[in-house]
View 1 (spheres, rainbow, N blue to C red):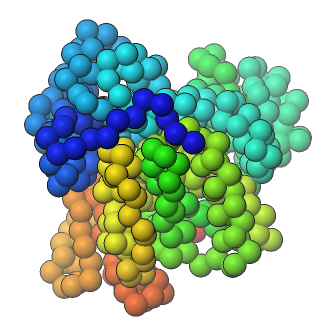
View 2: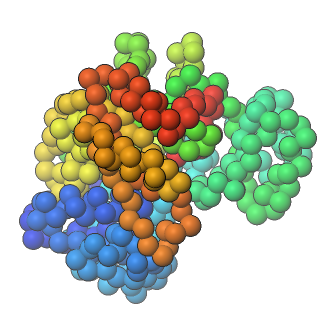
Length: 389
């Protein structure tokens, strides 16, 4: 597997970054370590990614002239999150290299195409039905079961575009949503764990896999990512088999993530593929010898990938603005907590997310005890994770 439009990057070359998530600033820091010049493209001039770049170009995702200007100034362009429109990147391919390619985004941004991809590989995923009208829900709910989740086929990344259906009385609430777009009705998998595989894939098909992680949620919000995850040998072996099968079939260069739902009886369901660096991967900033950001840039620059070694059991715990007073207390007393604060500006004032802490210990149990003892977070495992981050 290799994506055709790749070219090696060297110090002094120009890397373009398109997108605006918390990945952008961390990618710029890693790119600078490699001696790369960075141009950022986005609609939000005051975002952290745009402000940190050597040069930024303000433009909408469909502004052909601005995109051309951006592409022609870059030796390669990477998208820094799954939210970037695949069609924007296909247009950019006329003017520059897109090492990650566009195939993986096209597969994962459409839920029906993503399911067809899973089916092609004979992978277990949650049962679903295509829904156009309320009558489709009433007809399919018996086979899909309660609770189920109504999700738009085109991933809009907007939580309000989804609806959890716990009983038949919830179904009429879907009427307004169905007026706007087509949906799938997805069954709920009674998960014991959500496990995450983070993979780096090079231009020549070279592949390195980070240690298995476990995500823990509070309602729909990612609370913790734990490394290493507690899994049986049989689950670990099956996850590695499925992961390699997906990586073989997915035309992608760089770091990407696959998440799985695992039941009490160790049945494994593929939940989603994120063809970009994803927040759970931040746990590897300290738990392994190479971060997802450094490994991603090695892949897209055409460098050999680093062998990955686990340094310390680590738990990444996320916190929001309402918890900042308590976080300041830990800031003053914890010598094994490493903090990352997200930039705050005009456009992030309404967002509650503030940052994350990486808690290192001799075991994940010790790290968890420290976290629980602070009483900042109410540790809660949720049976189903829906489409949470």
